[in-house]
Each structure stands twice: as C-alpha cells, then as structure tokens.
Image (cartoon, rainbow, N blue to C red):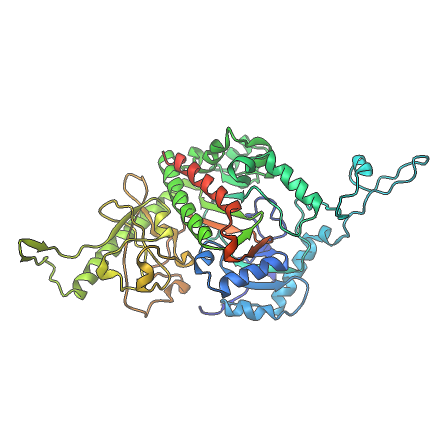
Length: 509
C-alpha cells in the first residue's frame, strides 16, 4: 500500500456521524480516517488481530491504521501508521491534541469526589450530584465507580481506523451492543451491578443485544424536524441511548429494526429494505462463523450497521453495480475461453454416451450481503485459482457464495473460504431488475499487474470504485481479549449475533 498524506492541521475536525455516545472522536477533512480516543487495551487488541494469524477476524472489524498520541508532539507510533499506509507528522498530532483540548476539557477535570458528610448533629454538605448519594454505602471492593455518561474517554491515546461511513451520501447508522454480560474482568463492583441492571431491564436479557443508537435519514431536514424536534438539522432523526434502554423492549424490538431499514420518506421502499435486510443477515452469519472460530472475550462490544439512506443514491448504486456485473461477466467468459483454448462456439465431445459440456461459469445469486461475505463452492478446475473477485450479475440462483480479496490455498477452499472484505466495494454486488437481492458471480484473474489498483480508486479492470451500499463491522474493544482454546468461543456475543440473524431473516419476508 502506497504511503498517504495525513491531514493538515487546519483540516482536522470532530467526527460528525458518531452514535451511541462515542464522544470526542475525530476525522480528517476527507473523512477517510476515524480517530478514536481509547484505552491501551483496545490498541493492543487491534495490534494483535492485525499482526497475528487472525485474518478472518480482521475482515469483520475496522481496518487498523495505527495509534496516535493526543498530547505528545512526536510519537513513535507514527511509524506504525506509516507502515499501514499513512504518514503521521508531528504537526498533525499537535492539531489533534489541540482539538482534543478544545472539545474535551471536561474529561481533564478530576473525577468528582465522594459526598462529604458531617455527624448527624451538624448540617450535611452535598458535594455529589444527588443527595441520595450521601448515604450510599461504600462498595464492598472499596472502589467508587462514576459513570462517564456521554463524555469522551479520559485518555491521551487514540486508535486510527478507516472510516466505516466514508463514501455514503446519507449513511444510515445503527450501533447494536452485544452480550448479556456487559462488564470486563477489571470492572469495579458498582459498575458490574449497574451494567447487570441495564442488561436485565432491556433486550440484552432475552436477545443478547441492545440498540445503542441510530441516525436515520428522513429525506430532508424539514421531514426530520417534523418527526423529531431534536433532529440534527441535516435531515436525520437521532435515536439516542435511551431509545434502546427505554422505548425498545422484547415486544417491539423487530419494529425498531424496521424503523432503521424501511423508510419511504427517504426513497427506501420495501423491496430495497428487504434486500438490505437480506444482505445484513448474510453478513451476520459470517460474523457468527468468525466468532465461533475464534477464542476471544469481548465485553460491551458492538456491531455497527451502515447503509445508504438516500433512496435515489441507493438505486443508482445498485444500477451501476448491475452494469459493472454484466460487463465483468462478459470479460470472464472471454477469459475462460482463451484459457481453455475454446472457440466462441462451444465444442461438444461425446464419449460412451456421455457429453462433456463446455465448462460453465460458476455463478452465485446473493442477497445484498452475500457477495461481500463471500464463501463458495467453485468448480474443481477453478480451485487452483488463488485470487477471486466478486463481480455482480449472474444467470441462475444458487446458495453458494463467492470469495474475494485474500489468497487462499487450494486445500483451504474445500469447505470454508476466508474473505478480506476490506478490499471489497459493496456496490459491486447488484440487485436484479426486480430489486429482490444482490447478484454475484465468481471470477478470477491471473494478472498481478493491477493488484494494487484499489489503492488508486480503481478496481482490477481500471474502473473507478463503485459507491458503497452497506457495511457491517464489529467495533469497541476496550474490554476485549484472546483466551485459551480450552475456554472456547465467545458465546456471550455469539448469542446476540444469532438473535440478530433471526430478526433480519424475519425482515426479509
């Protein structure tokens, strides 16, 4: 990956698409980078995933670019960012530190002290937020936990990631927190009790997840304001953390997801909504498969759902994907004919009353997501091809998936292919003319000349990148760690993913 210039001092800005209380986050002017203040444990987790043998896990989380210091003028971590494709200069780090100082001054203040009380014979001085806290008993572990609320995290370190919302015209965003247990091993008793109470009173208890926040485009600012006076003024209706804690319950949780996916006012009709739901369902199945293959514990992690919320843009992206798929399918057939030394007219050879048909292109019809999830049964004569590319349109409908973006050995392709979706563009998956799903087909390319074309904004055929349609990423790893194989996969999170799969399956009908 070629080095890239990092933003100028004057170009840094606060991240505008934050949901679920992710305060204090930053972005560059182009919106390519997402800079998140975090604890060192989260940085360590990203480093282990991307530097270790965890390609499948890396494919379902944001692309890790490195880390930055929010206070130092120089930082050795800049070298790590440069190695990952960015060059971090000292002035950029100073600018980030300046922004952090301006926007998060509250976090620099000392934590509030415990309420000060005097003997019963004298008056009581209340230093805490409520009088009730004056008589609160000391926690058994003698650690008083003060909720951070919506304030940004008190840390001088930040993780640099790719921006999951970049490229969308009007990204609809939903944060879904996973698990029934929400606290990490080092959490004080008060935090454990508070988080257990939240879990017991919300959909965490039954479904293993909770909607933490949403931003849903309403078509225009006036429409959003009419529905919600607290909308952001840019046409989005905002659903804050109280939505998932107070308004959403076991009886209406499916309707909450319908609110996210189906929005006639913004031009996202039922057909498109069902296709997006099918896409997310297939990608959720891939997330489940990855988590079942790993030995991790991730407490209070989330799934970030993003899709194009402007109906006209969504339909245009789908049409573009269909056109690209048709052209690529034609090129694929020509390539196969050249490699098999076939004439344009199929040649039939008859032996012992059996006909050996002309090898056919392996095709796949997938819901909006299946092409990105990618994972396929391919013809035996194609298994030696190590690099595959999701194309788009196909002629038939099968249940197979397609692989893309990662080198696969022949033996590894037999049952389950691992896909690096960082190199995929969701718009390469295309709806059929009746808008019932996204259609994909297998392809391969022996030419290595264009392998880095995606870094220049083009695909392997020299075309510019298609606009994105949807994306799903696992995020938030402050309380994440790897465990021994004997401890097994993370059932706390997987249970929530399974519930989401069932809900999105219902939304496809």
